[in-house]
Image (cartoon, rainbow, N blue to C red):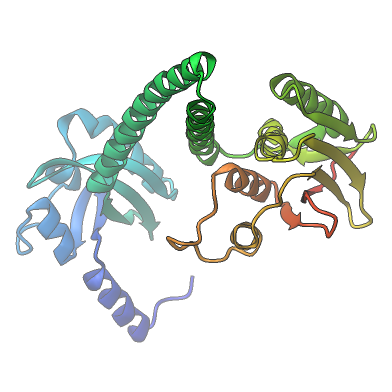
Amino acid sequence: MQQPTDHSKGCFRHLFEELNDAAVKFELVDDEPMVREANDTFCEVFGCDPASVVGEPLNELIVPATKHEEAKQFDERTRAGESNAAIVERMTDDGERKFVYRGVPYQDDYGFAIYSDITDDLQRERHLDVLHRVLRHNLRNDLTVILGMASKIIEQADDPEIESTAAKIKRTADDLSQLSDEAKTIEKVLGETAALQPVGLRRLADEVATNCAARFENASITTDVPAGLPVRANDKLRIVLRSLVDNAIRHNDSAEPRATVSASATGDGTVRLAVRDNGPGIPADEQRIIVDDEQITPLNHGSGLGLWLVKWIVDSYGGRVDIDTPANGGTVVELHLNRALD
């Protein structure tokens, strides 16, 4: 192994001292990590005296009594020349806190340990999770009440203006309910890793079309998908296609709403999966946000989460979303997906 030069030693020393995270160099003595050097941040976080910390057992200084077995396993990996990475609990002047721990072996029985405090980040995440759950629960319950009351007004109203107003309330509540469902789906999708496998399009398209047709009785939903055209995706592709067809009909102001799902192979190893409708079209600003990653502003943010959901899932497949507004009206949303081996 090439020995470090004086210059590289100086650079490392500067990095070690200036690192914002707690860092310590230790030596394994009789399987026990003993502190050989500690940066200022380490001493501040763990309440150590820089003058006397050298030579102290690292685990006795910072590892809670209930976590000593875990720490011992990390030490065994260091002795075997293996790195460590984990979220751990360590004892500080402010009590136990959570850290991202990274352990790196260095020559013989030496190693480095770096601790990044993430306690506040995790607490913020938990608080936001509770807030989101409460908001979704309350929103769902309140919308159910609004939808029920609006439907009752529509049934009993004698005044056309009152009936029209109640119908508008019901449509708005339906849209909010849809938005809540999409937000919940997005949260779930973004928290999962996409494991890709071959997915046949013809059966999927037929099932989604049948499901949506049952919910929109006045709509015409057709498919034109050849057999034997699998793509690399997963079960989330059903969410994508259902969202596109749902949006194509739900926001369609035509007297006879129509949507067609089609698919075809291209010459570059991809498959074009498209949903065409005869609706009013997607506003140009919203198209640019989704397709061109244009910056979101308070006045330019899109009307919902459906297309974001589609984009993020397709992105996870390594695919692409295109949106076209033909001269003869309507919208065509195209998904370009990688073809799977038959």
